[in-house]
Each structure stands twice: as C-alpha cells, then as structure tokens.
Image (cartoon, rainbow, N blue to C red; front, side, top):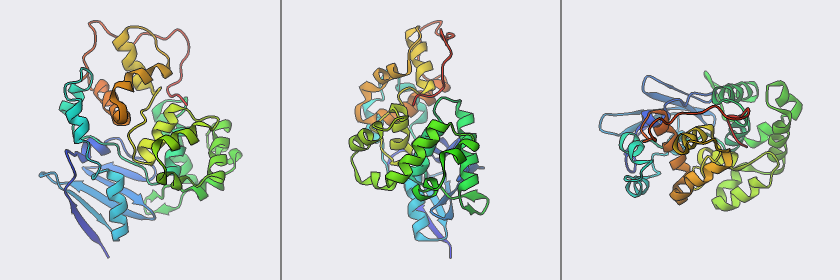
Length: 293
C-alpha cells in the first residue's frame, strides 16, 4: 500500500533550503526530493511550485513521521516578523525565509550527532556518524534506520572507539543510552532537558542545542560555540573570541535562539550579513577545535 499526502506548510517553507546538505545514513536529498527512513519505512517528499509539499510513504504512520521530520507544521512566521529588521538577520531572512531545521528520526540519533560533531570538522563528523549508523543500524533499502536508544545502548565504548568515536564521547553515549530513555525527553520542557543533559560530563551548550533543535524540534537553545558562529563573531568584532562568547551573539533572539543560530550561519556563509569594512577571519592565537561540547 502507498499513501500520498499533500501538505500546505504553516508559514513560509522551502524544502530545498531546509533539506539542502541533509544527506546522511538515514536520508538522501537528490534532484529536489528527500528520501528518508522514518521508523523502519522509507518515505519521500517533494515540493510543488505552489508550495505544497507532497509526501509519499507506505503507511499513514510514515507520513506523520516524515511530516514531523520536515517541520512543515512548525510555523516560524513570528521569528520572521520580529527580526526582519535586525541588523544581522535581515539579510538571511530576506533571502532564506523558507528555511527551517530538518530534524532527525530519533533523539538518540541527535545525541550521536552531537557527540560525533564535537572537536572535529563538520564533514568528518558527518562521515563518522554515517559510519556508525551503517555499522549498527538496520538497513531499509539503500538507507539505514535511525538508531534508537536500545541500539546504541548495545554498543560498548570500545566498539564505538573502533568505529572512530573518541573513547570519552563513546562512554558518554553508552552511559546515557543505558541509563535514560532518550525519547521520553520529548515529554519535558526544554529547560528541563537542557539541565538534565548539561549534568553529563562531555555534553555542553552546543550538544544541548543539537539535541533540542534536531532531536526534539525545539528552538530555544542555540548552537553556542559552533565554529560558524565563532567565525561570524570574529568578523563582527575584529578580535579572537572563544566559543562560549557566542552565547552573547544569540542572547537577543530569546526563545528563537536555535533558529537564529541556523539563519546566522547560513547567512554568513552566503555573504548576507553586513560586516565591518575589511573584516576577515584572522588566524587564532592557538589551535582551535571546530565544535564545542
């Protein structure tokens, strides 16, 4: 059986802006279509010229899960209205207003993504995450199912280390997946989630932001310490900054800090944010990491 749903997104929505660069072990973006494993089924999404998002899957459940993954119902019009004249966001909002945060299939995958992304370049982090999921995940066609808590709990830190994840981060992942049912974090307010994860050794503000944004679909916590934000703040202030200082960059955006993080980095990468004359990324005074904890 095949089910097709025609969805009219709440507020401005661009599938191409949202899904661009989203290819990993569980999904692939190609030729204007996003195919993803949701649960243990594959679903596909495309967008028509009139903005309608067409989702096809083998069941109603796959349609609903894909709908959540795509964030089509998460209207961010208030964010666009409130910050359309913001000195940093007006350019990104003008050009990228249909962009939202594409979510991952499980909270466990978002934790894995956060731990893989610490202290290494983004492309290495994605390659590491893909390697781990392909090694431990269940194949679903040419893709793999997003790992759940039980799947990751069966991995020892040594096994994760053999796949390339640092021993300390592997231990954090195994410990959390064995002691906490991560999917139940959906039932708690973001501040409770942030406080609980923040108590874990090896998890900092950046990791909490990844879990909240991509695993829970929340937007209150930004990606503090992300190298993209560090580079932007260096260009704006003309001095070297530490990762934790980017919290001040996100503070004005309040409950929209998570989405603001994404728009700021996407806008900076596209040259949509006004910078002081002669601004450039200076060499840091010491070796830096590309991700904070």
